[in-house]
Length: 259
Figure 1 (spheres, helix red, strand yellow):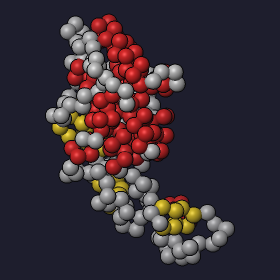
Figure 2 (cartoon, one colour; figure 1 turned 30 degrees about the vertical axis):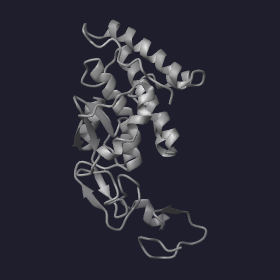
Figure 3 (cartoon, one colour; figure 1 turned 90 degrees about the vertical axis):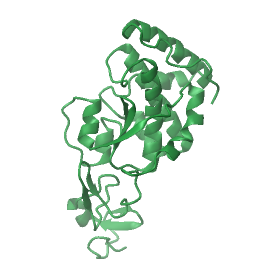
Figure 4 (cartoon, one colour; figure 1 turned 180 degrees about the vertical axis):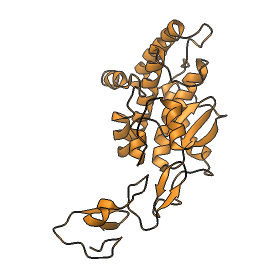
């Protein structure tokens, strides 16, 4: 094996890094700067302002400003509909630097992100707020699709309740966020996107995923149609109790069908 960076042979007894069909020896990998998205220590890393370094393998193959996003969202509608989610058709898209996107979701004092995993630990790369999906400057297609399913559900519930987003500390907010997070988790599993499925199982932290564990437990005993009925009833009660008068008491439509 030849190291992609130093072009020297890698000894058989030496650990190495392998990605994109290339090998990097341990000495080179140890101190080399690496790509924000894939962690690969490329030979042609370039700085994306507001994000981090991007390698030659990721360049041009990621969802980024200028991408046509509507065709990627359209196939999600049939998946979301059985969960009572009607994805808004008039959403705008806003591309934000990682710090601005994170601060839209949490005010916690957190260290800067070296890699996308550091960001995902505390925030979503796609986030619904005030009529728009706010997006990380670079992400894979699978990341976009899975996390967009979370936030399309969030957009539906937030709009129905008259809220700019689902950020909040009331039981309504936590319950609604957990439901949306579980929908995305379910989408990742059904699509076979194992990386995103594992990410959503444990991240983001700081309460961003709300009562997600409640829905994990519920799914062991209830089929999706039963879950939808339970969620619809509870959201109505929680909205009337914890939101301002006039907020939507029934954020889920009654015509939900089985996935």
